[in-house]
Image (cartoon, rainbow, N blue to C red; front, side, top):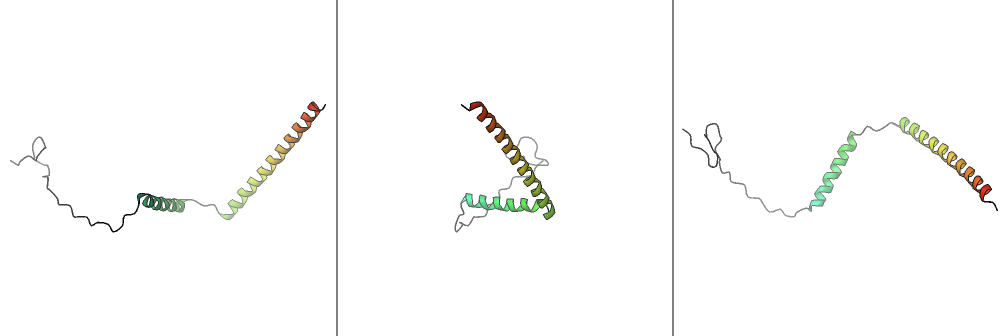
Amino acid sequence: MARATEGAPGSALGKAARVAVAKPAKAAPARRIPRWVTAAVQFLKDVRAEMNRVAWPDRQVVIASSLVVIFVLVVTALYMAALDLVWAKLFQAILRP
């Protein structure tokens, strides 16, 4: 019968034996890069990868969307100016001495 491995209860059948593996000696790095630098570089790599996955609109879509935004902006500005004029005339009439 096979011997049980150390610290493992029960039969040793079907279990891999523990083998001590010598770790290779690490060479001392010449210069250690700060953690924030490696984090910043990784972040920029991730940003670049994400930007490559973006579906960018073509020129016609950008122009059409810009025209819609400008039109809505002008209409909203005119509406706000009209409301301001109405309220100003109303308060002038009420508060006139």
